[in-house]
Image (tube, rainbow, N blue to C red; front, side):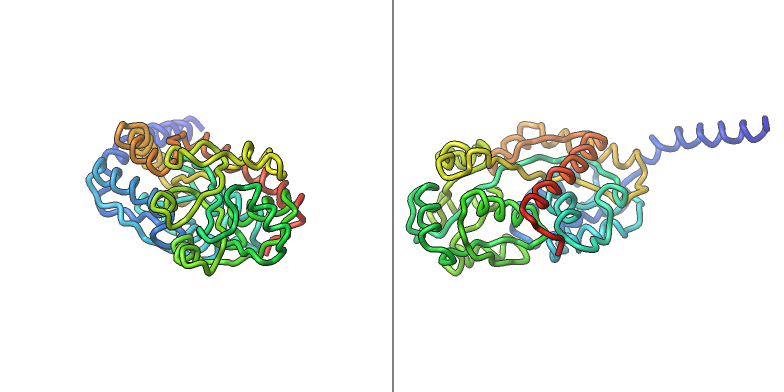
Length: 325
């Protein structure tokens, strides 16, 4: 028994000693960063910012691989099923983790057990965007028009298993409006149709849409939280209070995950470098331009947010009578 205890103690000591050495040695080859949505959207832009910083800090390329489809679950599943060797990580979002579990049948991964949460990169607001030809100057006029013309306006979404879709349903329920849902594989595919007036509205994050609003190609009715890149756009809780949107204030987050079983030393090193970047002067400036609030949380804090959002969005889906699809 004494020999066994000594062996166990030695194994633990060696593991503790090896962990810092592993973190120092890693990475020795390029790291794949899977983005579960097509190029050009807010998730992709955030991923590329973080990838560039990690590559600079860690001395190896962080190669962005876009694996869109099924509301982000295809790319997330690719991460979950990858080798836990530190050479594949992925972007997680409010949609791919809590949203997918609540809204989609037979999700091929567990949002927590299949992954090693690394860090929440940051969170952002939602903005209700419209083609400039929509005949309403503000949220109150928009809702009045939608109520008077049921089924005339259509609204884009990037999949029935995404949080944006769930929140669009909530917005319609709160305002008593009937607008037609139009699904896309990613925001980058929805924007050309929104600009071209093939679709009227889109509830999205401001990262990719801000330049389109400032250039006049789109108009923004309201945001769910203060949005520095769109300073003149009012809050839903204020501008939409008279039409049922007094409490409409959701947010959306982006984070980093690795396959479950990825060495803790690697997870901690990625977390440290990501947190350092998002809170650096250049990171703060870059994120502010896209109205992304830096976070850089610990793995444990990030896991707690995922769990909390699973419960919150599950309650909202049940309230709306929405069944997984």
